Length: 251
Image 1 (tube, rainbow, N blue to C red):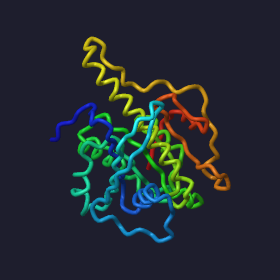
Image 2 (tube, helix red, strand yellow):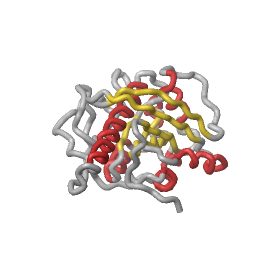
Image 3 (cartoon, rainbow, N blue to C red):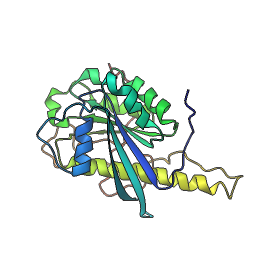
Image 4 (cartoon, rainbow, N blue to C red):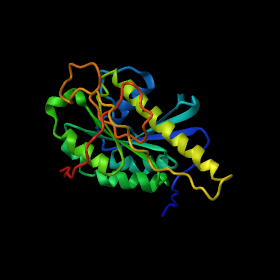
């Protein structure tokens, strides 16, 4: 069994992996983020792993981080290859298709794989409901998945990889989580000079109200329908909606 750490410090490098069942749109999200454009052609199943590296400026301190994003194949035959790229991941995008109930049947297995093969107990998981452009064919309730994510300290968003405006949604989320991770690393380094004062890595309580979101069914709105569970209270003016915790079943 792999040895896992509660956190890791690799300087200013952040690694993001995209995981989930085959056909949920991981590659479309990857390409949307990489190129900022929407393809009208369906991408073929990923045979193994695609990777891309970019530099981002994050946080109030304007730190530059090197972001590596890995798009992994979701089919069983390529799963063993894909899990090799999970190692040392900081952020996992766990993608499902809001129109396909089968895409969440094995979600707990994906979560376990993420934690096992990343060797990082402190990995930040972002649950992404894709294909919001097909909301009329929805099979998976937004409130069920937001509750699921809330109970497990995950981020949660719904989006459409066919909406170019949602590229900013993904970018803002990556910058937010990366900023939080960099803050954790800085606090962890400080323990070297102050061994009797361990850093507090627990997420601060979100501030009272930062909500301004259209409903998931309101596709006429220019802003993406999304709910994001906050890890800290350093929010922009386009704040993210808080989610109430409640029990639910996914399937």
